[in-house]
Image 1 (cartoon, rainbow, N blue to C red):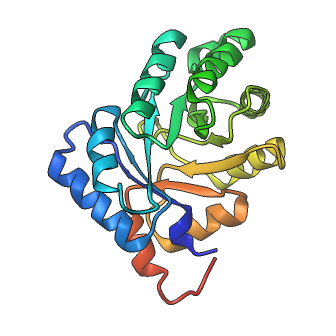
Image 2 (cartoon, rainbow, N blue to C red):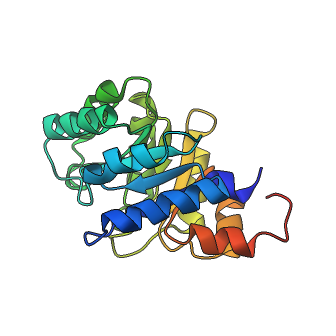
Length: 220
């Protein structure tokens, strides 16, 4: 498996312009990344740019805090899919996790999953704010809600992906879901380390640098 095929080529800055999104899409086509990951307002533009290739458009729901109401998250997901999103990343309700309100955590995920239908859903845990027991429980609830992925981070928290958290998440979900590592992955070596730890997908704004740095390797 080539490392490029694991990358969600990401631009989620609030100041991202239309021209930058177009460049992001051209880079994704050149390197055959898995997706481009953009804010919901830019999904339609990205979809238009990628309509003649296999690169999907991914977007983020309830981003970056996860504190929107479940109905709002579900509506946002539906709107994004209608605009061309082929994958959805949602931020889990972190406050509900800290409250140990597991019913709300699961119903929040399920609301978005129901809105997604067959579209793959990735649940962002924001692991920098959670202890290991909370990470395990959040992974278990994501699997129960039929999410396809659990994801480490938004990239807007106090820290990004760590090897320890990726390993813990992979151990918890087993074969029932996949793991996406995101945050702080800026070169081919760190990307490879996350893949070896159990990640099947990488969220990074450094996709081009990673791909260029990995050209001497046939696959990872």
